[in-house]
Amino acid sequence: MGGQPFEVTYYYLGLFGVSILATLVMEDAGLSVLGFFISYVVGLVITCSLLSLPAFMGTTAFPELVFRLAVTVTFFAFFPLAFFVGLIGTFIGIGLGSRIR
Image 1: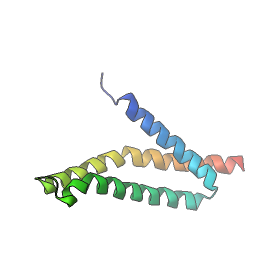
Image 2: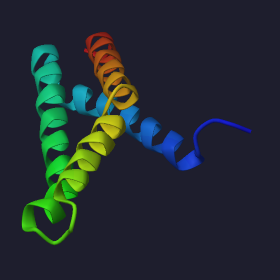
Image 3: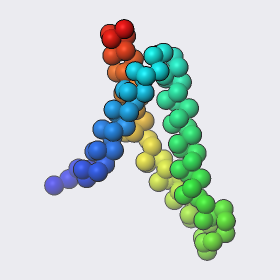
């Protein structure tokens, strides 16, 4: 049976829920979208930096390979599914927030 493990599905559901709740708490559509993009970029930078740390510190025999793998893993972890799930959650939160107020 193919598909993704339950842990990955729970991760995306959690990301979706947090995106909706964050937008409801912020109460501003423009600020919510801006906050999503800023937090997304910060998460990308932190993840790629931590995964590349062995290459930067010189603790591996193949630093180019480690850096290339860090960028690849970061890209596939954050894009395309996580990006769109978070963005859709943000827009749903904007819609819900306008209906609640």
